[in-house]
Image 1 (tube, one colour):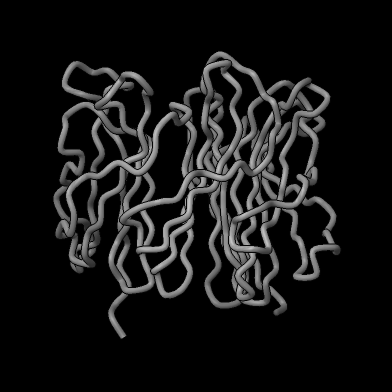
Image 2 (image 1 turned 30 degrees about the horizontal axis):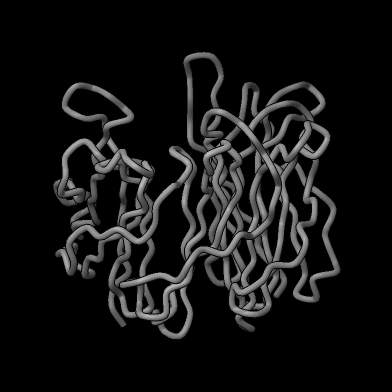
Length: 305
């Protein structure tokens, strides 16, 4: 069995310090307690932001990001690149989508040993309506079919909300997606969830995970356990008007939802939650800020599976 490594991607401002004209950087564990020297992945300088990296079932790496090397006629392209497990390029940068929201994170999951790739992102149309879509590839990410809208939320907002979707796949092939939207009015604002039971052809009507307690943008993530339980984490305001991290689970039957748990107790604000499963352990990490100070926090819990 190959040794597991950590792979990291991030973006840095371009040569003129413009954060909207950034570059995608990649590094990996070097086996000596550190990381390899960072390398830039985007072949056109000052074009890429908001990268995501996932290990494919065959051990290769798939990197995706939002790219603006082409600003017209439809800005904000979706670009991919493949690397091997040693960080060597297997492909050049290539475009698989367009018309994305500028600053919303992406989501990726796999099926069929990596032959099928599912991606989710937030798109923006000419009327500034920002809905999420699913993109499906049947050839390992070389090409993708036309995007499928996950939910018509009708959120019209002039600027990018910085809160994209999350996706996971269970052992039955069902696709689980979570996201934030303010919908057509503030009364609709909140974290939502949907499931596709036909490989992404259609999605069930959205279900509210938790309403928004203030006109804030909420960040969310999900993962799926071996027993097909869905674990969702997100940020929202508590009773003291501070942003905290909350968690909820959806059982494999799709009907049994757990009560909402607050799992952070930040003096300032907690945000940007991420989660992962390792055997029967759930790990949740987030960022806490208090004035000029910030720190990363990790909590773990043992699961009864």
